[in-house]
Length: 211
Image (cartoon, rainbow, N blue to C red; front, side):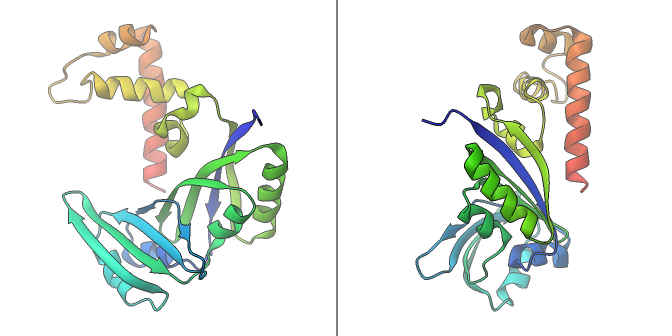
């Protein structure tokens, strides 16, 4: 059994991907689940976006087939088949275990995992040979990194714990259910340490949201 597993994040620009192009055309973010390749070379896609106009763009794209839309309070979820093979497929071919993809303004962020140094080398070589692919993050996957907040938003384990605990205890509610001192006590840290972690987490989240 291989003990080493790494969290890897790539930024991709200039990819001929239908979802990337749609995010640029509508100027709305698109969050996609890992693509599922079929034996015939096509790909099953599932993704969500706050702007339903993404569906109109994709419906006019010849590479997209069987587009289905489900509407909800927070936007729309789509399912479809794509005939386009994008950059993420090349990385998957070499061993990249993609967990989430975000498309925004034509660019992409792929977050996933790589098991072992041999696979890592193959994935990084493929990324280096592919125009528009940039390595953003490479960190060991440990027990503290199992949180989806850590893997998706590039927070430290301490920042993610502070954010998740504050949310669970109603710190962000109006009015607040618990204050900073109560959350800090739950975390077992000082009030100033909690507020510092929270500020850094909020700064990272805001930076990512405005990209």
